[in-house]
Length: 183
Image (cartoon, rainbow, N blue to C red; front, side, top):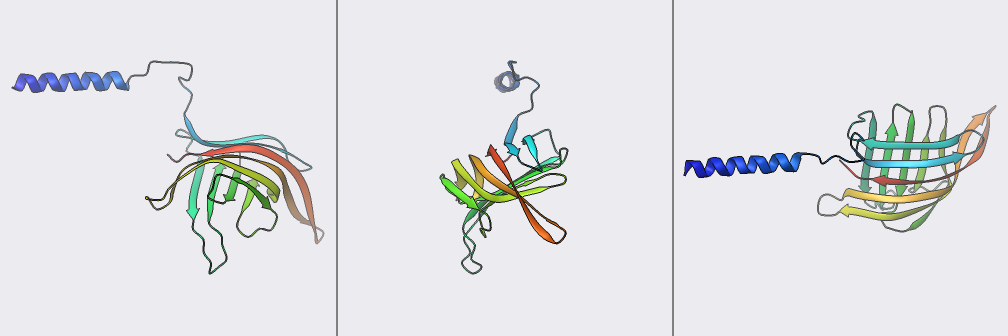
């Protein structure tokens, strides 16, 4: 009987080792990433293509997502909040959208839904941006945990600053896409 268990143990170990080995391929050495935002911005202050991605290897980048229920007492709508930062590039991204797969128009001054892009020396916030959430999975059985969100956006964001006591708003065009998957 002891020989049977030893053989079973060795066979299980051999199967585990075989399943754990990589076959190799084109993606060897490339770190897997779960979440990203890629976007292009064009305007008087910021121009270029930018990307924030969260991989299992880049501990300097942070991602957060949360479901926030409606709160009639303070007038907030139900929303999904996603934020990503890249501390090496000094970039940040934040978006608040309804928890639905749909096209939503974000407008300047809305108390709940917005989009934000942070740079080392400038911040861009919602002007008029169309956001299309194409896929969303919220686990209602596990405290409304965000399992997956994917979408794209395009429109106008604003760089708002003060110069000589006067508020200045500079428009920038933006387009991009995002995907959030928790680790």
